Image 1 (tube, helix red, strand yellow):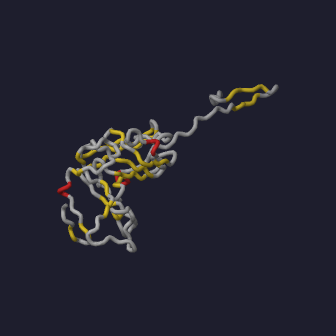
Image 2: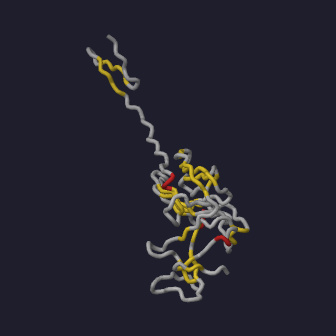
Length: 224
């Protein structure tokens, strides 16, 4: 009867007998798992609701294995006023409809990005990659506008006094007739159009401005 030796073994003579010596072979390092996420974990950054994405919207992906490290965009990463599509040293990229999305923050469980401004409303795919390893292609639906207000906490939205930038709060409330600033995303296209990832240094008009309504305590504010 014959036996087949493992490919990493050899026969060694010990005089009157033979012994099998196993030769250790170097093993390949384990591969990093691919990014893991689903449609319901891709949301408007100001709202946990899914299906609230529009071009030029701040968005968040929650998942696992999204990055090997944690990194936020810095001033040194911004070139010619444009946000990077890969944060240096991370290899992380987000593709929306095949276009690289500007990135603000990456971590193993969360990515904050900007939906490319030059996309149109309709069905599109989102993928997360680290170097050459990509997660699943997830289908999402973009709308023309998906307005959402950034929260200060579970009770209040983020708003400031326009005159000095201090936060509105129960101890620092707005007065009748005062101008306040609220922070939102998903307001849709602007005029003049903004390039994807371009940091705009002055106010840009909203293409759909006349369709927006702002209500406080159920009362609609006049359009000015």
